[in-house]
Length: 237
Ligand code: C5P
Image 1 (tube, rainbow, N blue to C red):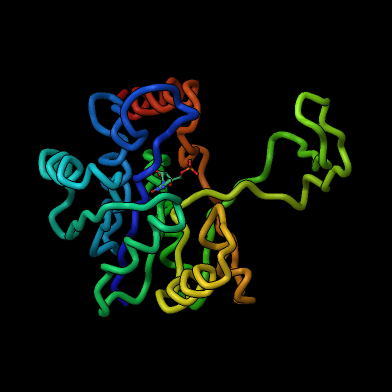
Image 2: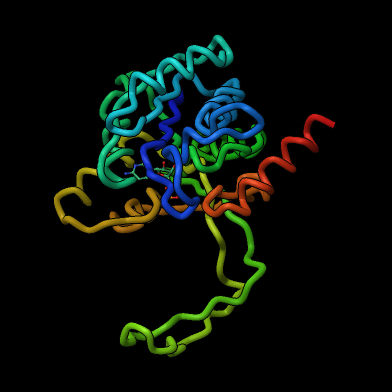
């Protein structure tokens, strides 16, 4: 089946500090979302890249993508995004043509994902998994907290066994019909989700993990920009 990658890039990036929308920030002189689009188009299996731009920034994003060429075999579409990541993904999904059987969803905020990770996700969907997520073990122990008043120290209620936890990345890959159904169902229920696989889990469909990659980290805070520049410098060396 043909494969499309939807790249939600409509977030404000508030945690990164003041400035342009996160996906438009530069890494080594190239906007983050261009890195992300190139990383997905680097896979020979990806035929179409749909970039979901900030609502008022679709024209700017289109011209940025035109200025920084992607591999020619991949087509590119740009659509304006929404208020939430979930809405933005849905708006991207809406323009994926009917001949596409596999859809990847990839955060623009993970600009350095290696092509091997992209291919591993696509291969697992081709092998029959309806939903595939790249994931890594956690370095930190994680605590669950209980309710607490503002300003009070947060009470710990549980420490899940770290060996059974994984931190998930993108691209997450889906049989197209499963992802479309998940988005339709969640839109009706009104519940939010922080990743697409979480919506598929609510349908009761199986979700499986493949190994993620440390270079697929999410650029969220200022220190992540330093790390991203260092990874790019190492790749150039
Ligand atoms: O905020 P967070 O880091 O979880 O955002 C993940 C991705 O979702 C980013 O690439 C961001 O640009 C995108 N996003 C979006 N539309 C929104 C909010 C976030 O496309 N309204």
